[in-house]
Length: 314
Ligand SMILES: Nc1ncnc2c1ncn2[C@@H]1O[C@H](COP(=O)(O)OP(=O)(O)OP(=O)(O)O)[C@@H](O)[C@H]1O
Ligand SMILES: [Mg+2]
Image (cartoon, rainbow, N blue to C red; front, side):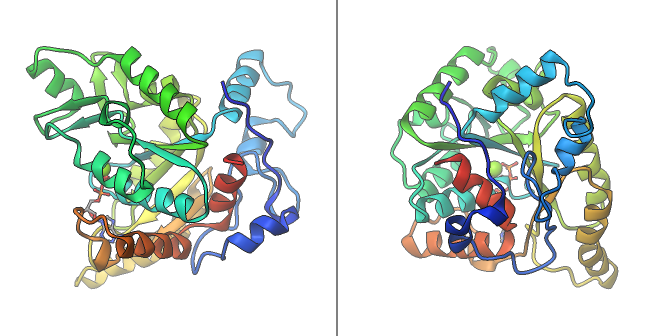
């Protein structure tokens, strides 16, 4: 396991502040888990864990936290399919590359083609040329949930192959961004879901959620389940994957959801990404597209998230 430096607070790191512009709007000032906020208070995650309240941590909890804290990378899941996991992962990968971070990407399980379109997009954004077998070790042709696609293909997911590929990517890069498939409880086998995949890779989780009506329920459910399964949730990024709605009620929900989530979530809101037409099409790989991704990430993501990535990947 590669060792990772302890995260230092944002406010004490001028070098980091110079790299990161504040998010343009609406994003919580919360730090990511383990990072004290601007007033030096423990993060919500640490407060929730009781680590600063004097409750003695159980050995299993401590072991899990230590193991997670030594992992350089993050796992991007979503509240659903099509919410923008690939775009957010691509944006963060392009941002890492622009900041000189040696970033790797992975789409461990994909469906819907012989080659994963997501993996190709992520590789373009990160400008990596790792072998496809490492980036996308499991890919099923039919556009179904992986468990169903595997059954219909008469096979099952080889967990050891995924873990081996991930370990190799970890050795090749300072920081690895992994995109999940669908949402947290998408079945991968009869009794395994994406949550088990996250545990296998030992990564902290970022949840991408829609901005639109219905997102409060989906996001709270996802975060609650992730925490119930003792995954480390960094926070949530809201993303508008569709153009603004013509419906007044729908627009009102999109406007009010970020604030409502900030109030109701037990983890930080780490981004509020607007719809950006130029990013709406998958098949781009140009330098202009990468620059647009970087600008979009800097506009949309909380400085706490970008700082955490900078510090974690040092
Ligand atoms: N903020 C945005 N602005 C413009 N287009 C977006 C935005 N977010 C997502 N999209 C577009 O919406 C579509 C779905 O996004 P994306 O592929 O990232 O979702 P996903 O969660 O990765 O889906 P899947 O579950 O299929 O992997 C893509 O065509 C993407 O380019
Ligand atoms: Mg995707």
